[in-house]
Length: 508
Image (cartoon, rainbow, N blue to C red):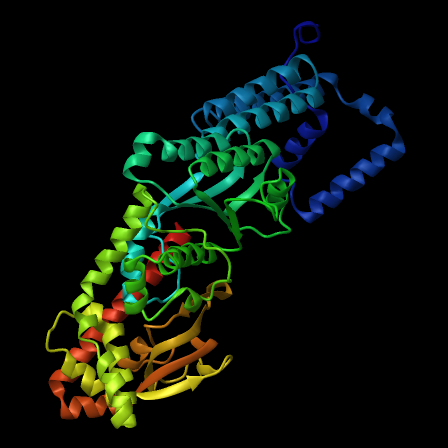
């Protein structure tokens, strides 16, 4: 009577039977078959057989199991779950006691969803933030370009997102962008490109997609170009952004790429293209020392995202101009000593010396920033005499992964592409090598098997230094040999740092 009027411990007959079944040793296949057979027997004989069981025994059994379940739910969970989860359990117990098992389950589901939203909203959707001078693409560039991008990259911000973007988590992203555009912050660190990586984003709701359009408008007012990456055109996240008209063919101040590496490469190319096409003396000098121009970057023939000229006066433009001037001044002396005039004279009298002069000029331009030795000209001259010029057409395989190295290559023009394959998860990295860089120097100097496959992506002119030629330099000029190997190792260290910076930014 008291249980009927006041309620008793919550229980559910089928659940209690299952608990009892396992408490008495059930769980094997045989016990399951025995239970199924007994159930069929009761079904055939009818409910009358239940009448032979003492009511006190059945009631006591239900009470004991019910109390045990209450202890398991309310006592054993103390200190093992957080407060919101414990509140959910307590509410379910009360609702099941005073109402119904099914109603209690529904209330528990609603509370779980509510508390999930509350807890998830407290998490920051921004996984990490980098500057462009610490997060680099896998493109192997001339040393002058690298030095310029080290400074210019400060105007690029990479924002990596994670989790689910919805009305509760998008606020942290929007607040971060507003802080970047704040007047005080902008004065000390103005930005040109904002790269948002969606690789780790699983879902995005309509309100978050609308917030992205607000972020885009905020950036546009500051002439900051929004770069989205880690998106597939047919993914749910991409469709959500397309549904709010953020990602369309007519979108201004917006670029979209499939991966972070592609986005970083594009921003770096835009900095360089902006300088090369600016008409500024610093931009022209940068193109000369780096053996490159806007056409050599493999970019489409369209208007650059970054335009510089002498009439523009802003902190961002001044910063880029000063970065280019700093790099070119570091090579001013070496450029003045380059064999340009010697080449023009030698073509008239000794055509064979023209080849040697071009090889000398390539070595000086490629290695000039890696040495301050005034007597390094002897190294250039000795190495230039051993270089062999090669013209490579598109698709040529320079070497295969696993081959033993027999030479290294100085790239004068064109584009080479290296493909690194890692056995873990069949993951691969593609590295693009531009003019003014060296291909294959690390495996060649260490005499270890090639760790990549290199092909010609754009018709290239390279200069080959083979094993026999390097050995000859070591025999005839040991001092020049030591200096050459040392500067090649410096180049390798620089390129290794660029590759590692990309890996760190990708995995962070």
